[in-house]
Length: 104
Image 1 (cartoon, rainbow, N blue to C red):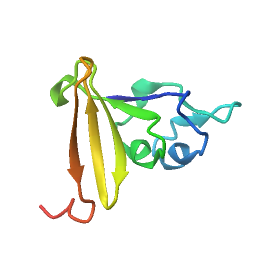
Image 2 (cartoon, rainbow, N blue to C red; image 1 turned 45 degrees about the vertical axis):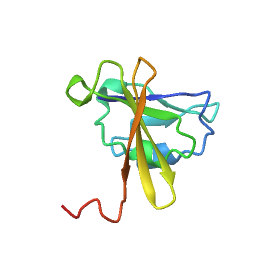
Image 3 (tube, one colour; image 1 turned 30 degrees about the horizontal axis):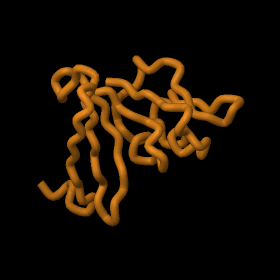
């Protein structure tokens, strides 16, 4: 798994850089985030959850729906919505209540 950062959406807030446990996300001279070695990404999704403008997507492996499917998150009220976008244009989502995520 690896992330992709859409520089055209990035607002340069630096939140992704701050939370990346592998210090893989850098901030360029243009104040936009980038990842130099996406293959080194751990797939922890910390940056996805912090990006306020959904500029970061996670490429899912074949065992997770793969074949080019990407994932990003959006906050809606108290829920965290995980949004999956397939190459064929179809979109699906899972709503997670963070207060209940460790319940099971």
